[in-house]
Image 1 (cartoon, one colour):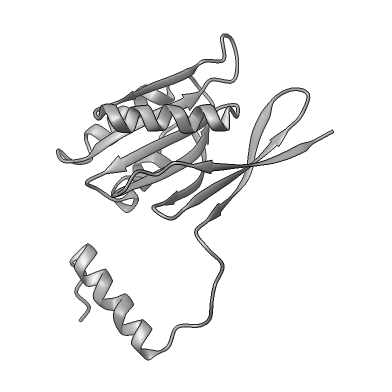
Image 2 (tube, rainbow, N blue to C red):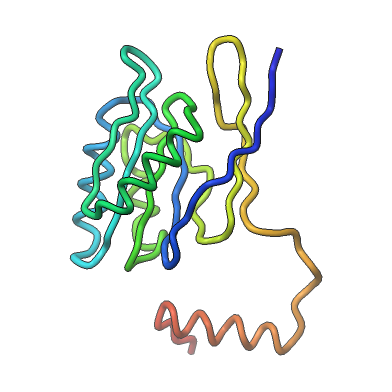
Length: 163
């Protein structure tokens, strides 16, 4: 038997969340090193659901509130080897490639500031993430004004200059 559950993630105002899957207890230390060296301004909290031995939620970070919320999100998930990273004063695009390159990381499910639901499968063995619902459904196709707004936003956020 498999039971499905939708778990809502808490994302504090002004933060982004990264949810992924890993394979080793050293994940917390390696993610900490990646995040702390990415920017002197980045604030973050990490929580990791250990899937063997004592099966504890391991955690670290440099911001007490983000650590607390990361732990609460991990408790809601309680899914083997899942990890939650909350970041503030930075964007996932600044750290995602380094996180993907971490030798323990198997998969990134999402990196977002949108409302987030994680779909969990529960079996007699335990729980696992099978997917995410990131934000909302599409409402249409962008028009010329929407394209201009998107480009303006990108220039503001990334200082991107084309041409």
